[in-house]
Image (cartoon, rainbow, N blue to C red):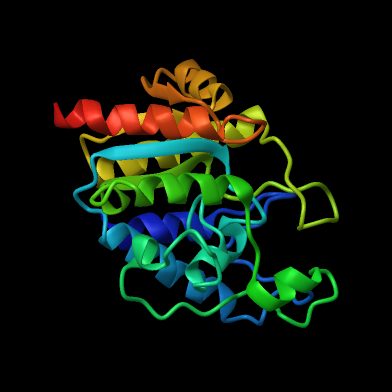
Length: 231
């Protein structure tokens, strides 16, 4: 397994009510047919920088406000565009020329999204936490058990819970990622992700999900995790 093969396999996936950011584009909300290729290059760069990562942080499903437009799990395009006040794009892709894939003139975007790109609150907390640990950004791969954004029928800009058959497929890609970068410690973001991984026999450490008032607990648990690895 190598990075290019892994991305090719991700790109080939198709299913109803699932957007594939490395294959698909939407004429109403995206800049054009070049968008999937741009997202593939973002992901390729992201993985190339993390070939020696020690941690795999994994949530449940890719979100429409994050990886849908950036091509990188748990990462909004606003971060990559340098439009985020708390997170540096260099933490994600190093020195890299990122261009947005969402359409700044789309009527489906609100005024802030048109000006600065999409943003996702969970992504903000995760990345701002990683930035506090100088070497951790490239020592961590962020991922999702279901690595494509599942959406409600007829509306790409929504999130839905992945089905069991979808998770069956997604877990196989998580295993491929572990072959690509072997030996990583798996950290589940949220109990739902931890329980899902457990059902598939994948051991992990669970940290609190940042949403619903969990941000401070998440930060403390991640700090403890990195401190413990240095002791």
